[in-house]
Image (cartoon, rainbow, N blue to C red):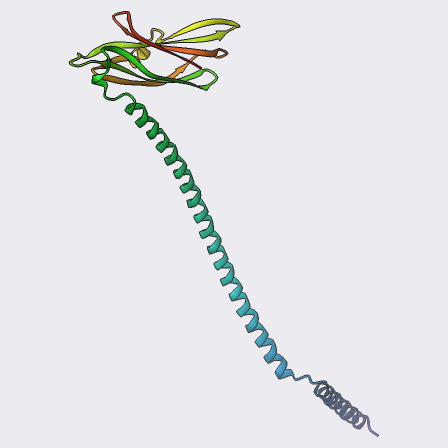
Amino acid sequence: MPWYWRLAFAVVVVAVGGAGALWAYDLGRSLAGINPGATRQQVAALKDELERLRTERDQFSSTVNSAESQLNIEKAAQKQLVTQVKALEAENIKLKEDLAFFESLLPAHTGPQGISIRRLQAEVIAPNQLRYRLLVMQGGKGVQDFAGNLQLVVTVIQDGKSAMMTFPDGKVSDTDKFKLTFKHYQRMEGVLTLPEGVSMKAVQARVLQNGQIRAQQAATL
């Protein structure tokens, strides 16, 4: 047989064999329940479902973040309210103390004749600081304006020895803080700063006029 017939025959055999192989492959997939068209549709459907789930996840995440932010804002607002309530309670207590303080002193013009010191209060607020508070009154009717100054003498222990420190100590700025000018009463309060290392034991308040002591009162610390 000529060579070209043999070549043609070989081509025909290969073609028939390839077609048979493809037919057998498709037959096997059909028997196994595999449908290429259906598989592509399932993949597309799964992709759509995945995208939907991702969108829902993003929405839920945004909602959770918003809720957390709102919760943090509410917590901060609540904390601020608690702070404000405590400040108002402290202010209310102070106002009540002031009211009781003044109610115990009124009426001033019907009191005994002369200058007096009422309700001297002193407390140590730091190792070397003393807060004082008092009321200077002038009793009697038809009294004239009083002009003088307040003097505070603090008894301390310094280097193991007892000593006294007088305020004001001569500085002009301090002297102005202790001036008294009133007709019926004048409230005085402030903070004294003492040297480091002293131990405060007592304080005495004096009302001076022209160098003379008109009234005095002491308090133990």
